[in-house]
Amino acid sequence: MDLNKIRNYLFKRREISMAFLFGSEANHSVGSESDLDIAVYFKPSQGRIEWESQTRYPTEDRIWLDLERLAGKEVDLLVLNRAPATIVDTVLREGKPLFIRDRKTYLDLLIHVSKEAEDYRDFIEDFYQIKYA
Image 1 (cartoon, helix red, strand yellow):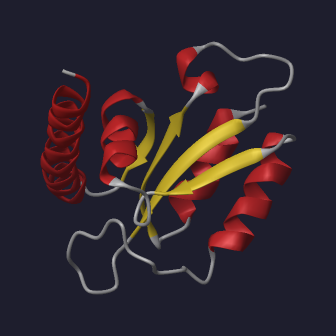
Image 2 (cartoon, rainbow, N blue to C red):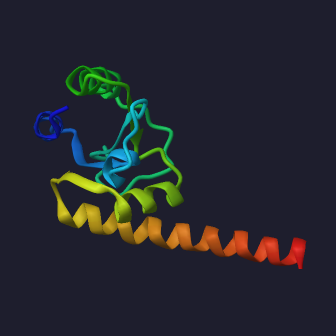
């Protein structure tokens, strides 16, 4: 599999603001049955940061199929615009950037989802303290 071909393909898609490799391929723990985990952030139509949105992007199915063809294996395509804040936070912090077209958008998204993810993690901790203390 040629990651440069995948990176170049995604970079040419102007509707994508950033793309990341995450999961086993990014952690160098690939097994024979491993798929390829790729996260993309579509440029928001309203021009502001968007996550946990229900928007379905017209080109995402085509992109997914093209990525599987380029990778030669199964691809799990995560649309960051729709993902929960905790997952987006993890991908942005621990994933391997394939490209970031606009650093400001990346940083704005990171700031927003980090706060949401932290609030959620604090809530879960408090919940377990109350329930199991």
